[in-house]
Image (cartoon, rainbow, N blue to C red; front, top):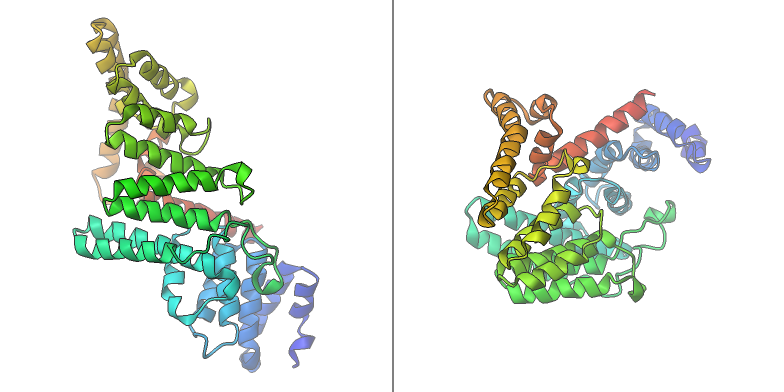
Length: 383
């Protein structure tokens, strides 16, 4: 039958995406409709994406992209949807790998800047993995490539990305300041290459770019991370007052605020500002943040009391530390004493502190985020 007579086409036009997805599934199940399978697969991926079932959409986008640009006319449209879906995933790693896989097959012009940014990010992550594996020379090459790719992102790519969504038929998305993000990756690569001064200047550029008064895309998370990196560079150079200045620029309640508060405690301690250090530690150890994982904060607190000859207080802090973390240690020993898959490990981890500890590993945190997203999609499908 003529594709224009497919009920699914009308469902898409009427934005009835759930009915459209079911109808396209039925088309794909019919061998007699094989000539229309390519289009049905693309429209099914698009319908799932617009329903918010992003991981399900990726499955069908993969099938389209695997055919390459010479075997399907939907290759580049599918690549656009890949970028669009990627902006909605908590864990961007699956999209980074796909972008790298199809890098040689071209990319729609409207997405060139984001494409180069994602490739730069991929190369930086690859360099870090190579470095951890002891392949220093290969890591250096990957970081240099990350810098090259970041440099291809245009300075004017500071808006919200393309003015329309994929193929002009989806809502536009706020991709943040792609140029500023590329500069941040460049700063990370410079730091990994031990060019600390150049990295310092690059992170300052990011702070300037993310100033709300600049009129570029608002990206408070990126601005916060730039301040954190600046603080760490100065802390490493033992320029503690500069480090404290940048830690203080991190907004209260931001995603990395507690981490910055903890690190600033050591900077204050280094220059003898014990009261300010204790003030930060008091916040970290308050009941409000009881599930956060900062065990060394208790050690630093005990050291400060000890150095000020307040021995009873130091002893009490260490007793409190044991009361909090000995049960946690016992729980970790019980969990790790027998082999288990990562999923089983997370199920066994009853304590919020254990989960916080696990999530300090970026790979575990990303996998957990992906698992949560997939579970949410499954729940949505079962409703």
